[in-house]
Length: 213
Image (cartoon, rainbow, N blue to C red; front, side, top):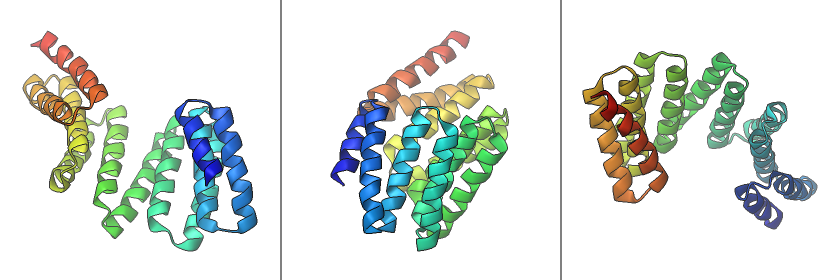
């Protein structure tokens, strides 16, 4: 666990080589001990570093190794997380169809187990894929679903994020009144919870709306 934690710090610092070194040290001991949960976690962490490095093939290899163990032990939360990570790699490779397939597989499990917070993340991810594909109708549908649950569970950061995503879609469609409504709501929530980077991003979007008004 100490090796793993040191790896986390190096990854946070952007030192991917050292992060990988410590994650692999941690993995070697976990493999000797035979603890499947720990091994799956190490595979996942190593996959995260590879995707940070843009090495999608290695990331996919380790995410799938992690998934296999999670399936063996019946870790549904972990399986859903692995599906989500695998979907991300496919999207990075430009394979939107496979990316969407894995995001939806992740969503299905999260809905089965009633994991509301992570369901909103899945809705958000799927909405972003549809927006990238130019399917704003479906994108809005998923972002609005995400917002509804985030409001139900009181996830303020999530609410601000969803409002921003919805506002951006309306801005792109030149529905400036609705864009302004959602972006201002996003800005106010980010201000309330003091999320500076969220405020900055929303301010940029609002500037684009004001320029068109």
